[in-house]
Structure formats: structure tokens, C-alpha cells
Image (cartoon, rainbow, N blue to C red):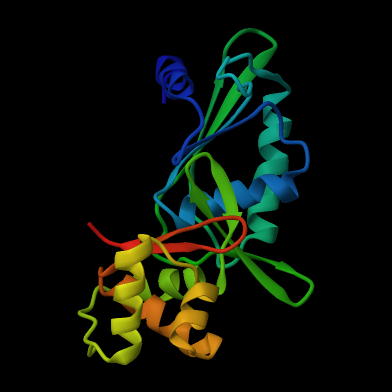
Length: 211
């Protein structure tokens, strides 16, 4: 990767596939961004770039890279592959670019205590994946036809979506009088069948009909 290409990436601003960090402070938090990129559409983590997209560089960029590579190797499960480019912008400062592909081994996650925490990308944010997103990531790796039958619970869901446009898991449980596990399973299956689209949110994910 050339310095010109890094400037071109930075000019795009942070988004679904791009994240900026001035330095590798708190690497245990930055790896969440890498996990989110790998679990979603892939992308680039740029270190030495300001929030506004200024490629200002960072002193001792090799040390920043060492810290990040150590965190990636020790904290992310399963093992995550990436490509790394390190470029000097002047005698003292440099920029590092971690290129992450959409992973075939998703969902990648962190272990916090006994809890597995996966992250996904939504616009320019990295959000913790809900149980439903985790299942969609896990099952969606294998391309297969999802066969299901429209029954009463699916019919209620379609009518609710026709009225409101979107629905949450809690709302679906309420309108269809379903236990949470069954409502969750139904929504996941319909997303995998390309009937529904899931929109991750910090609170509850939203579901809508896929266009």
C-alpha cells in the first residue's frame, strides 16, 4: 500500500469498512473494531490517522504495531488473519494499516470472563453482536437454501411488518405471543432465507422486509 492510497482511504472518512485511530492506546478496545470489520464486510484499521481523517502519523509506529499485533494474537478467537502495511510519512512519524478481509471463520470474538463477545460493524460504529446476529454469522458462513413454511407465527410477523415497517424481537414476542427463544429462532431463519434484513442497534436490533 502506498502513502497516496492511505490518504485516499482517509479522505473517505470512517464508515462501514474504515476505522481511524491516532495511536494504539487501549489495544484491548481497538481489537473490537478489528473483530467487527472481520465479522461484517472487512475493511481497514488505520493507526496514525486523526478522527477528522488527517494523516498526521504517529511517532515510533513500529511500537504501536507491536502492541496491536500482540493484542490481535492473544485476544481474538478464533485466530484472525490480516495484512499489514507500515509507511513512514516523515523521518519521525509513520502510519500503519491493518487490512482485514471478511472472515470465513466468523464470528470472531473476545473472551471476557466466561462470556464470548462478538462485534459487528454498523455504519461507522462497532456494536456488540446480539444472540441473533451471532447465529446469523455462524450459520450464514455456509451457503445453503433455507426451507421453511409460513404458519401462524410468520403470518403475524408479516402483518406487523406491513403495518409498522420494522419490528424488534421483543415486539414480535408480544404481538405473536411467542416465547423469546422461538421468536428469535424464527427471525434468524427468515434473515438467513433472505426474507428479512437485520439492522444492528445498541439496544435491540430492528428487522424489516428485505427489498
